[in-house]
Image 1: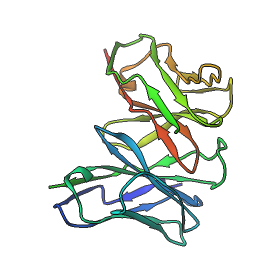
Image 2: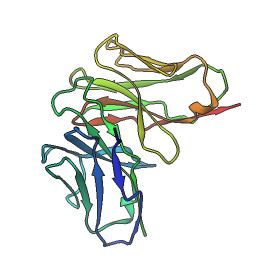
Image 3: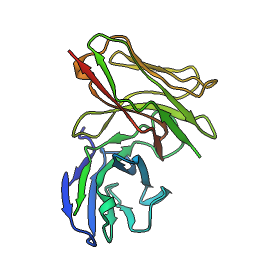
Length: 117
Length: 110
C-alpha cells in the first residue's frame, strides 16, 4: 500500500504570493490532518478533514485554509505569504474518523518544505 | 488546554548506552499517547503507542509505559545504536488531532 504522498516536496515563493500544497492519503483513509513544523514553534496542528468536512481547526490565521475532495485527497492553501510561513508542512492520514482509539493512528507524509523569500 | 512537555536535549550518547527521554502530558481526558521519530529530511514515523493507563508500547527495542498517576510516557531503550540518531516526538491525541512535544534530538556516536 502506498504511503501518504505530498506534492511538491520543495517550494520557493515570495512574500505576498499564495501557495497550494497537495496531499494524497493512504488508500481507504478518510481523515486527513495538516501540521506546520518550524524550529521555533515545533509541530503545530493546522486543521483536520473527514469526509470533505473540516472537523478541527488549530490556532492559525484565516490565510491558512484547506479542503478535502470526495476521494479524500486534500489541499491546503496559504494566501498572502509572509516570511514566517516558511516551514515544513506535514500531512497525515488516518483510517477512521471517530474517537481516540489506538487504531486511529496518524500516518505522515514526507512533507512539503516551503521557503518564503 | 492539552499539552505535552518533553526534554528538549540535544542528547548525545555512545553506542550501547541506555536512553531515557522524559515526556509528560496534560489533558482533560485520557488520551492515546504516541512516540514518533523523524529522520533527517523525512516525515514522522510512528515508533510506538499506548491507549490506556499501564499500557506498554514497544517497538525496535524502544519502550514506553502510560502512567496515569504521573501523567507520563517516558521513552526508554536499553542499548542505542548509531542508526537511532534522529529527533523523537512525544504526542497525545488521536485521528482528529495530535498535540506534540517540542522534540528531542538524539545523536548516538560509535
